[in-house]
Length: 208
Image (cartoon, rainbow, N blue to C red; front, side, top):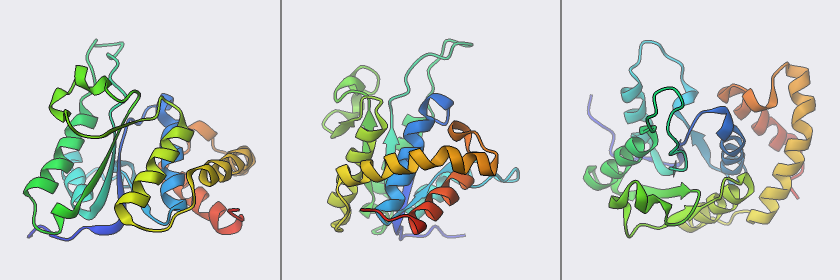
């Protein structure tokens, strides 16, 4: 099957850690992307035992015009004493699609997040010269960086970062009750369920 040249102008690929320590930031990114009128995409959206993970990533990256890549997880694994390279690998795939793909793929836009602006120079110096956005491990800062970047690359009129953070705080206040009703733990809601919860809440709640 021939590769598609075009990418969706509403799909945003999220490349980030999937561990519990990052869950709060991951959920904040999902919410921010939805409230801005885009659709988050993640390797977690499809659990198909018959599909290789790399093939899944190729498809997602091909389909998405925008990509958010968080490189903040660089700690050594407690069991094996090795770092995790999934996030840099997926960033490389996205940049490769942008560089070597057809005209539609060359329109891809990238947001690279980390804890500090220049920390990446110690572990992935080939990114020198690229604009790295720091969130300091704070979900609210990740929201603000993501909103400002989406507004810049899409040229759409979006709610301000401050408004999104305020609305997200209201959502988080409602989330425990929603989780009790659905029998989920707030920090461990399955990806597709969190998406559904966030979308339904946004449809029913005022965003002012």
